[in-house]
Length: 206
Ligand SMILES: Nc1ncnc2c1ncn2[C@@H]1O[C@H](COP(=O)(O)OP(=O)(O)OP(=O)(O)O)[C@@H](O)[C@H]1O
Ligand SMILES: [Mg+2]
Image (cartoon, rainbow, N blue to C red; front, side, top):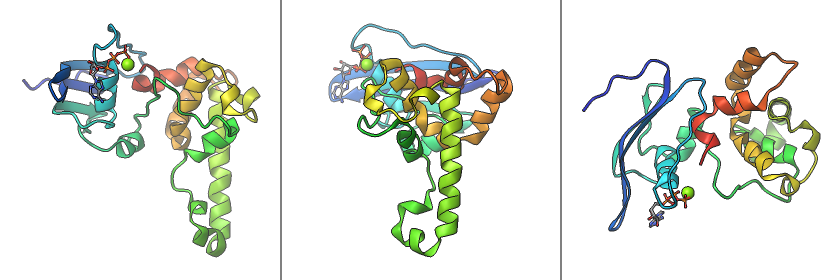
């Protein structure tokens, strides 16, 4: 059945089905996430929560269903494409690089870095340095927003579980629009990590 988009829904998941061989891990799951909300998915062990997150974020191809992110169908799209459209996730077991400082974990995640190709470092040094500066400034802003500035130079492995979850949202480092939104809503002088987390809806739970 076609369903009208709920006003203000940033994410609409409809009738998602995922089987592993004979196991029906997700059997027709539907939900909506309203813009600006914090939404939780709860259920007993083995209920299919992680599988549903994997399908919604493209880590597993779903068997059937629909996932519409800000009006765009992303069902069975690869995770990197979905992430670029603005939906990022964390993992049940956090995947930050433990033996790398927090600030480097942040900059690593930003896309379109010409310095990742040696050729550009040699042939386009100015553009490479400019992008690096931009990525670093973006990362510092995000650390402020997530209240992680104090631990910028600490190894990621020394963070608490909650801080590590926030660090995992680093894939948003490139999303200046979301950072600007969060700042506008809360004012630059009082960065509130809860608001930032609310902007990334589906990523916060797992
Ligand atoms: N990669 C996989 N291959 C085969 N079966 C899987 C796979 N991943 C999950 N399952 C099965 O799918 C079902 C749902 O598992 P899932 O991990 O999604 O549950 P969950 O709600 O996240 O549980 P938990 O609360 O323990 O994290 C379980 O029966 C599980 O054994
Ligand atoms: Mg799980």
